[in-house]
Length: 448
Length: 89
Image (tube, rainbow over all chains, first blue to last red; front, side):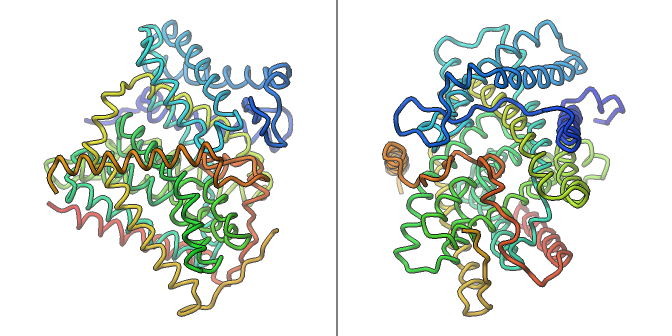
């Protein structure tokens, strides 16, 4: 197994890096110069009922707008051209890929339309609906052979991750000083290691990529961390489905019950918010659960979570290195740098490079507002890539396989035990740092 | 615990979790009327107008950023070594 120079343009891993950087480059150019609008299509929230939010825009109004279809065209053309070029360089047929991609994009369009509905997007959003729509098609009418060339889950995920790297701003590390670092960073790797040990040694789950994917979803930040580490560990499509489904369902419970329990214990807003930021998986749920406790709790929760968000790249890097040197090295031989390089998933380098460029080059040169505007554009491309990936997963999965991947319930217990450990350890860190018993209580400047 | 009992307990727990999640979703619990997002916003950039919620200047630290970075990397390396040690056969 040795690397060729042609791998740089023929291999999916490298192609994901180049496509990601092309998207980032165009977005940076578009935002900084203002010469053109590179925004991808995004559905505004719409509603079938009367309980719609003030910001909801009727679906008919959206579909009747020229800007909507122009953005749709920009999205399908940009992604279609880049992915088709990649597939061609991999030696596949454009004639077979292009029509299949267009059909997959139409399915993804329907998924995003569904997941923009007011009631449906409150708790579940695109990852869930993409899986569900894909599963419904594959388990009812079936997937036609001509659509299969577009089902390239890893390609879309890796590309989405490189784009996402640009939004992982390392400067956030000092946002909550040593308090934030202590709560977010001391606890996270310990929880991952504990869940690894518990999953592989106590529960004896053979599927190590599934264990690490679920562990990072639990300890870092749910779906986005699961996607990154799952890809880094070479997790199968079903592993990702299982890890994300469990994380999403428990997030719904935790965002409601955790603030209730915290209030019942009489914990301060600062401590409660930090506990929520460190333990509730998805960022949206963190903000809501923090808000339920009060403005100070919301601020603390957001600060801790934003530090956890930057961990994604480092955890994915460590997981890729660990799997390249240990898990994939079944003979236990000493692995040289060349072999590590060959085995190492290259898109992780792209993810990391994008994060470092955004944090240490673009941010200092242009300022926070510009970087946020660039990320506003890139976020939609990332979401389209992930929706294509999750729809592909659904199309390629059957319910029996999914049930088998639960390993007789062991995966559920891995999550439950891991999350309880996560809560207990985060509580200890929060108490140690924010209770005022050992250290001074920090003062947060509230924006509300 | 016998395997059959274990399976029943697992099924009951999974069923209760699913039912409670569906109940929460049906009742719209945990949502904030002023916010145009829910738990489905997985990543911070998925939150509409996240710039207004996730502000940078809520806390000012006197500790230099490089100290944070050194501590961050040191703890990361230490934990990676621990992970390798724990994974030994």
